[in-house]
Length: 349
Image (cartoon, rainbow, N blue to C red; front, side, top):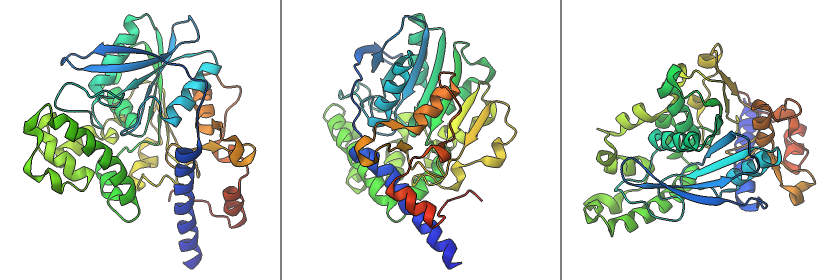
């Protein structure tokens, strides 16, 4: 029992390490965007960042995570890796995430798949006929929900999809983020969201609700502004927006990569049994990777250039040389040495 507890504790520590090292130390250069602003059906706008390297009609559309943007290291790293293989990329910014406050009262949420649909249809109008969807974290949830909503009626130009570090069960994740050290992550995200809300209040004073000062979690924030997005209650939001409720309807080749030591994801985000016989979805649960980390250290901390998940994505869409096993592909580091020496490998039971 003591050995199992030690293994579990070390796995949790490594999960935070795998998550935080790239957040603070990974800097991606060599990505040059061309920005385009498009209108949405509800008279708002979306900022799209294009990185075009080829005249062919193949395109990878990347959706960032919660309070992220096209400039986050995990997005730019993916853009660079895909560009280096000669493929075009469109990294789009969710409402208010591009550096410009959006027009409507609401921002975006984990189930706001209509904006992804707007982006994809815009790309198709530009002539792209072979589209791959890639989503990180919240963007992965939106991607999977979107594909599940479309089912067998998915746009024929969408050929495959990859969701990385995805919170498939929003109710379970929200509860998980409100525990222990995870509260620090939640407060980090919440601070940015509340700051943007204060900016929006200057335009829409009615958003300045009496209990706003008491909002101390993502759950209480969603509960306060549920009416803006058409939800009746917090549970209604979870039910309508969690990708896990749409997976059974996905009808194109899809890869889900959730590291077993991801500190953001509780066990409900690893539906191994439910997806075991799914005709279109592959679920990969590597032991290491953290949340959107998956770093390949190369020459130690001095060469945090690539992410093993980028290699996996290239393999899945047919651009990689060989299949990549993320567990085996992790190069030696101080933390990997500790893991190996003490056999601290997490497994989903």
